[in-house]
Image (cartoon, rainbow, N blue to C red):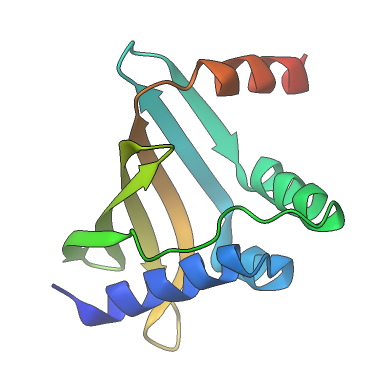
Length: 136
């Protein structure tokens, strides 16, 4: 287990929990995409702009994305060249969710920006409708 990837993930999760939009903006790579899929085979891709718009709107409403990140379990890390992946298990609304985050190394060393997030959860039909509405 690459502890530097685990530490970078904790930084990311803590920024989200704190609704630190500036930190999140710096953590997401400009080319960031979140590919989500569910049990029914639905798939949706969210961009950095979509994520940042959501975080800004929630922060303006005084709403956070959660109360804790204590449920995050880091299952495995893998490094390959300039990239590293970490698989994270969480529980969302009582249901398990699996995430694979792909980080890119920073030019000065260490882990830089979050390039991809692959998410598997039970049902994303609500997201498919939201993305379709936002892009039409």
